[in-house]
Amino acid sequence: MADSVHHAILTAAQTAIRALDLTGIEDNSVRLIAMPTDDLKTLVVRITDAGFKYPTILVAPIGTETLNPSQGTNVSDDIEYPTLVAILDKHKQDATTNFEQWMEWRELTIDTFIHNRLTITTSRPVKALDQTVQLGPIFDTRAWYERNLMLSTMTVMTKIRRIRRG
Image 1 (cartoon, rainbow, N blue to C red):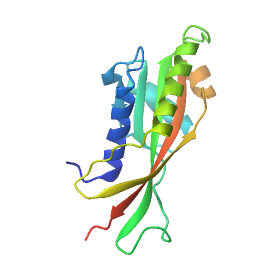
Image 2 (cartoon, helix red, strand yellow):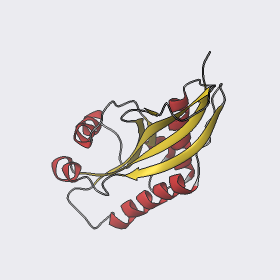
Image 3 (cartoon, one colour):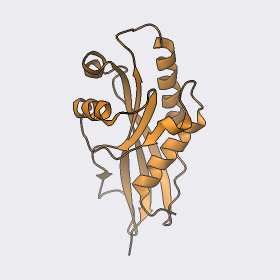
Image 4 (tube, rainbow, N blue to C red):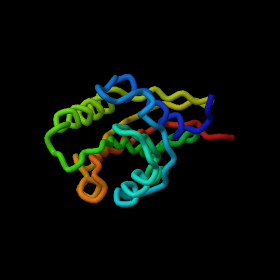
């Protein structure tokens, strides 16, 4: 069992998306990746250079964790972990062929994170306190026009209470 809380969150997000059984997206196309970036411009370049099979959904850490010293207890910390979910497909400048499918993938993915907390399993006790979804662009303009990619993103913020390591 993993001891990294953030990795456990990423894995739980990947599992939740795979469980949606999205039409046209194979389980092995829901990929957990380590792709350091804080902005979509860099993400678009790195994704197209990586040679992924499309359609694909990438799950990755993004940005910075949040730790609020005024929250938690005297033996635990409340930490919020950001998880990027990026839905990608090739489009060849055609905005109609897969439009409804793309929207459904996005809506179902949003729904799963809004209505279901992730099940986080680590070797140390953690308690999921809250989970929110920060929506990114429905379609990223740069990806669309410069890379012929449909890119739709969201960031899932998972707040946990973790017993301090001693």
